[in-house]
Image (cartoon, rainbow over all chains, first blue to last red; front, side):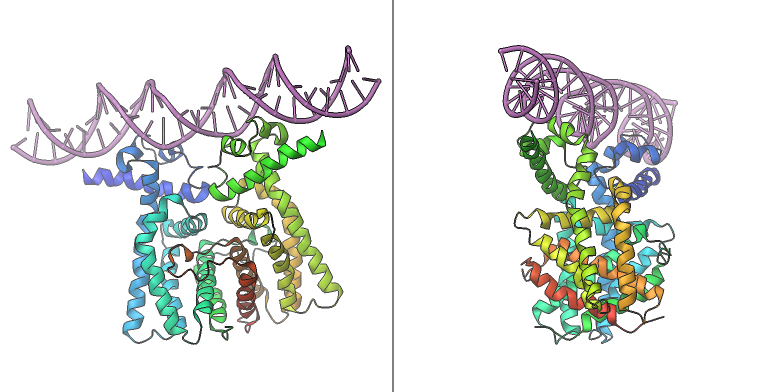
Length: 213
Length: 213
DNA sequence: GTAAGTTTCAAACGATTGTTCGAACAATAA
DNA sequence: TTATTGTTCGAACAATCGTTTGAAACTTAC
């Protein structure tokens, strides 16, 4: 009974992830999902209750492990006394994102796009769901950044975190605002390693420049 | 006849801009728009032809002037021989965005959010519409960046432009991925001047760091 | 084997979507 | 005035939406 449930339910989850990323939540109908997943239309409501709940399941399936992976990494570097290095702190976020991007089933890479979209759109379905885990995430990283960049005032720190995380989220999501019409397909090799290789120095340069206030 | 047309049509445009930003394209119904604009339901199809065409009108009304303002600024600094300064080049993009954000009717500030959403979502309605004006924009800025940062290879240049524009678009759009659950309302003062004051140094730090390849 | 419980299925539900239509209205020109 | 053109309006259109239902099909346990 658990085998079959998992079969249909995960097939729905995987197809939904793909379609939600591609077309967005509202533009993705249950009929598109169930058709592509080759399951009955009523299966979504049977297994998940509603379309809203399905979206939350799709999201949380990846989000929860990602957040806790970051916090675990943060624990690890603080335990070994590397918490003063801003590069080390940044890498605690980069590494789990990189792992997601390398997901052989490609679902993880898709999810990062879904995540960045959800954050930008401030999705109504995620507001309270996020506040549960996400607020701890923000709190922990604020402390970590403050410790690694002690010379910065609160204002500076807040702004730079804002820029740094926005940059990293969008980089992993592949949100290239310029690529759409670029002639030379230089960047289009979406190799996650290459992203990190250029992203991390860029972020660190902004984070470590002299304080302004 | 022109007066009345403008009256109804622009009321629709302005309400649509607000609602498209707030709820997204698909989740905004024509009945929401026409109700809030206090016009008849059929007015949208009469004045714009379809919901799709309405979205394109809403978008292009702001996008076209913004792009040409940037290119004009670019012409200006190149004419006065300041084209070698990467800060000057960056400011040719910042200034028109800042002007939009300061729009007293607030419509401009809303639009920057719509723009960033549209770019992230790769809106189907904008793909060919964008390619008309946007490709020149990308081309011109690629040249300008190459000239102002001659020590960078093509790879480096491409990546840094990607990061810089992503950062600037999202900053002006107010896409703060962390703000949602931040305790201290430090950043929430969405003063455009304050954004620029912190954004520009951050971007320049990443752009001007030593080459990697 | 029968019975209980779980999952699938086709069909339909009411609600809402974008769009169309023709009559009513307003404004301009002859 | 009358004729013409542009605009507004209420009503309806077919299509699609998320959801529900009750009966079939299947699995598991006794």
